[in-house]
Each structure stands twice: as C-alpha cells, then as structure tokens.
Length: 376
Ligand code: XIL
Image (cartoon, rainbow, N blue to C red; front, side, top):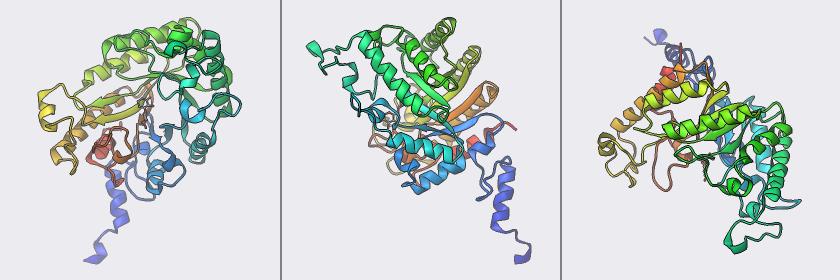
C-alpha cells in the first residue's frame, strides 16, 4: 500500500500544478507572484518589523509571495524628515526598506512625497516655527523651497533604487475638485506640477505616480482624469496613476472598477492598484451585506470569521481580480495594503480580515480564489 502512495511534497507539487502551475518550488504551494507573472506584478505594503526581519514569518511570506513592495509608513514625511534644519532627516528605516527590496530583487515603491497627512506641522509654519493667528504661516516661496529640499533629498538618496514614487497623494475631494490642503492653500493649485517637476529632476528615470482613493466614484474619477490630462498638456512628467482601492464588500460595484480602469488606460500612463484591501467592518449600503455583518460598527468577528463571510470575501476578491485580469494589458502592478490580517490598518482595535493571509499567516479561501482567477 505504502509503496504506491505519492510523497507529500509530490502531492503538493501536483496540487500546485492543478492550481495553475504557480507553485513555490520550496513549499509546492501556489504563489501570487507566479500565478500573475503574465499579468502584472503583485506588491505588498510592508512595515519595519517585516523588512528588518524581526517578524520572521511576515518576511518569509513577503519574499515567497510578492515581487514588489511599498513602505507602509517609513518614507512618509513625518518619519523620514521629522525636523526642520540640517539634521532634520532620519534615513535609517528608509534605507533598510530599500535594502530589503534590493536584496530580494523587488520592484520598489516610494510612498509618499506630498500629502496633507503624516506631514509634520513645522512644514507649514513660518521660518521661525510660528503659526500666526493659529493658521499655517509659511508663504508660497518658503513652502516651495521646503518641498524642493525634501523631494531632492529623499528621491535623490534612492535614485535608481526606488523605481516608482507616489509624488502627490490624495489631492482631490470627492466631487473631483482640488482638496484645500495646506499645500494647495499656501502654494496654489500648481503645487502638484511643482512636485512632479522636482521629483523628475531628482530621478529622471523614476516612474512618477499620482495616487488617490475612491476613484471608482465617477465625480472623483473625472477629477483625476482631468488633473492628469492637465499635467500632461503642460508637459509635466506624470507617468502613472494609482488607484488605492480600499474597497468594501459592496462598494464599488465591479462595473465601476471596470469603467475606472478603462478610463485610466486611455490616459497613456501606467495604471496601478496601489493599496488594495477589503474592509469587512466598513459602513455598508446594501441591506444584505449589512445583515451579514449584523452590527457593522462593533467587533462582530472577534471570535473568527464565519464560513459564509469567508466565502463571500473570497467571491469578492475573485470578482475584483477578474476585472484586473480583464485589464491585464494596462495594469502594471496590484499592491495589497498589508501582509496578513493582523498587520492591517483596518483593525483599529477590532478584528478585521481585509487581506489574503490570516493572523497566523496561513492563506485564506480568498487567497485560493485570487490564485484561481489569474489569466491562463
Ligand atoms: C496608513 C497606514 O497603513 C497606517 O499604518 C497609518 O497609521 C496611516 O496611514 N492612504 C494611504 C496610506 O495613502 O499611506 C495610508 O496608510 C492608508 C490610506
């Protein structure tokens, strides 16, 4: 009997073959980056414990499954450039992040240069650190100088090593108009073009991305398209658009995702999904989903995810990836915003399950669904 029983590794390889030839040679299990190798790169946002290797299981999963990384926080202004003046930069975490990506041969993303959030208050104050009358009091000239210094220093430091930068993040309101961020109020609408110009000066070969959320909603999508076209008409080097894709179970509809990707493909820039996750605890429009979630604001899944929800999440992920695969010729990269559920920013003290790997780093049914949706 025993003689004819295939060994466990062989069985794993055979199962992997059936799952689409996307197996990890070491484990025999399918991997995301292999399953999607003919479609687009598969990225993941990583934290300091992961890229320093302190989280050994997390680091191993990143290396096995993904071929691109984004820094969840360490390249944001407040971390890399917390203070004004000569000794204002802290490069150590960013350096370790980039080293990790290079060692593992990954497509390395820089996130993010100009954003209203996670930017220290001093950036918008006057030269003496004052916020006169309680308002930001840097003037246009001073803020442009700070922007230039920051971009030149940070992009310049990783020139040729970070392949793609989020130059401007979340500049739009829901209605598609420009957000009145401190950048916009102090510099004016042209802060966006200045940021792209400075980034291009600092690394002419880097892919330069405009990144935002809720672009699936038509007014905001139209605003983003108009913004990119305006920049292009002025010769500004914007070369990619990032749709963050922090989605829910019932928003956006797949038709909205499809329409968004079709419209972006026509812009002639690289299209990327940059921060994908599915929030199971977000406010829901549909009664059906709300019923499934019961009390959406509470910690309903603190004792684990019921099988029915697990399956619904797998179908949601399959649906999203079927649309991404449809647009595989135009999509360069799909990045998940976190490795395992335990790492996700969406927990906020509750138990959420937005990603493909559970808290124990084991793949969920949604992982299998994504693997099985790759183009063959
Ligand atoms: C989030 C991080 O995941 C959190 O750790 C941090 O506390 C806040 O920022 N849009 C972005 C990301 O562009 O940088 C945000 O990341 C999520 C929303």
